Amino acid sequence: MNQILYYEKQKKGSQLEISTTIKIFTIILIVLGIVFIAKGSYGIYKGKVANENHEPAVTTKEENGKLQISINHNKAIDKIIYSWNFGDETTLQGKGQTNITENIELPIGNNTLTLKIIDSSKKETTYQKVYFKEEEDTTKPEIEFEVEGSKIKIVAKDETELSYIMYHWNDEEDTIVEVQNDAKKLIEERITILKGENTLVVVAVDAAGNEEHKEQIFKGAKKPKIEAVQEGDKLRIKISDEENIKKIEINQNGTILSTDAENKDTSLNVKEVELTRDLVAGNNTITITVYSVNGLSEQITKEITI
Image (tube, rainbow, N blue to C red; front, top):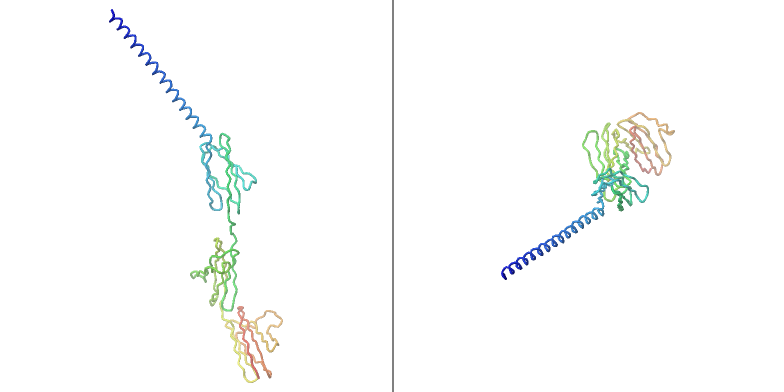
């Protein structure tokens, strides 16, 4: 009998222990579930907050005188509004894109860009930065030709800085003359005029890459020839030109004689002339100037004492 009672007590004790264990295990599962749900909810909340606080990434690059703006966002972009120096605003439509690249004009000098980005949730992000652009050189160089006797002087000028000039006669190869460090705004080059009719072509290039082109036909010729020989109290003068003599001027002790005293611009139309001038007692200063039909001239001065 006592054994039966003991068995029944033992059996009841085992059932009680099992029931308690189940209850404890259930409580643990409930607690773990609450912990996991809390962590998951916090993660979702944290991700939502991070998503809401994410700002668009803006990068800029200067290219060919313009400013390239690239915008990346995790939300669709509704519109972009920009202005220079807090002036008039310009609106660009985002069209629901998340990645946008736009090129806008970059003003010369120091300028403040204000950029407003409005996303699909109407959140506005402002970006501001100062940019500097140097003034562009768009002015071409100038080219001038100056005839100096049997040579021509090429003069190239620029308001900022020259790089080089190149020139050629007819179909010859180019000759390049680079700017000197001590005179960056000017290049001068003297070249001999070729005999006969020839075309001179000159190109001037400045530091900004602007080019000027000029060509002209030149007729090469020799300058007139003057010979003056004293013979007693006379001065015999012989003048010649391979084309034609246009005008002769003689200044003898301040007295000027000219074959075209009235400046009618008429040519003598001869290739050779011989003259004789009487010399006076004492000092004689005689200057002879001859002009050819080609625009060339020659001059000599004689000092003779009798």
